[in-house]
Length: 343
Ligand SMILES: Cc1cc2nc3c(=O)[nH]c(=O)nc-3n(C[C@H](O)[C@H](O)[C@H](O)COP(=O)(O)OP(=O)(O)OC[C@H]3O[C@@H](n4cnc5c(N)ncnc54)[C@H](O)[C@@H]3O)c2cc1C
Image 1 (tube, helix red, strand yellow):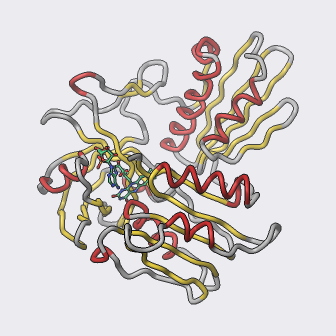
Image 2 (tube, helix red, strand yellow):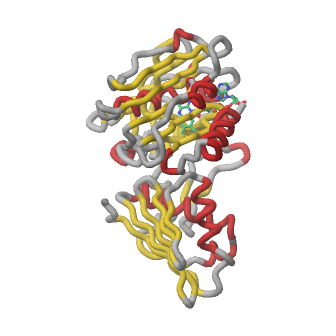
Image 3 (cartoon, protein in one colour):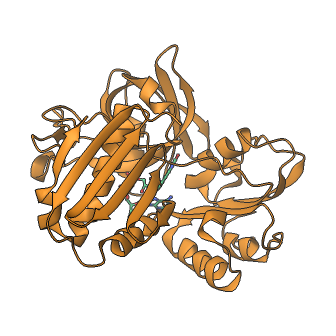
């Protein structure tokens, strides 16, 4: 564990009621692993580690990470949670150690379009030169793409209190999450795939993008490779790049099933599949829906190394969450069920 970057905060006074339990609730809602004790709460933010500890005089926060971007990102996450519990307490925190102030956020990078090409009927692949790409190599396979509304972008900045301030009004940025396809740190570029859908701002941007156009990149944005021996995976077009990356990193002896649902069979692509996994392509509107396949898939029993991974439209994910949590009784650490878009 590389935790060479470090910041701490102190609050003296009566902490908000039930602070640890409330904070644990918010962190778990973001699917972050937490450990809640009598007087301390610890949480893991991808590659940053946070401890909140109560004492007789107030509480202390300790955040450690492998680089400045991950430290800043975890600190922002903690502040978002504390703001929801008690904005006054959050504002009164005294921060020490490495805290970015009056700069671009350490997890912000400028991206310059190198090339856009069609990879299948409804997917465009964007190649992007990216400053500071080394900071994107760990901390997850996703990032946020920031698109400016006009030709002169205003990017986010960190204020003198160490909080990221986002441009608003006419300067408001469009923000959407994407998944790295390939990262090449030696040459300083990465690629990602945009699924073209009706009314999508990113779709419109990608169709018109030219070499030299600039965008903002916020990341790394989480998204780990699950480690289980047996996996049931599923997703729609938006999840296809993530499923492909997880399969690329899968151990060769992994077992399980993968379901990918697309509206157009022409978007099916080669998938690197371990021998013990079976891939089923589904055609939306014609085959039995993705959700039915996910719910019917066979999983090993409790105590065995198993994992359910699903990313799709929010309603499908909600129904899957109900089933796997409440009926199948899977623990949080045994699943990743994420809404990648909302209809
Ligand atoms: C962690 C994560 C990783 C992701 N990775 C990828 C990726 O690698 N490639 C990719 O293409 N997408 C990916 N997505 C999904 C993508 O972020 C969303 O589809 C997002 O809405 C696209 O933004 P937009 O600017 O195109 O659409 P917006 O302008 O935000 O939305 C406009 C309209 O499009 C609708 N819409 C959004 N997505 C779809 C869809 N798939 N089908 C039909 N209508 C839709 C919305 O309901 C909205 O009404 C990912 C999402 C997450 C959370």
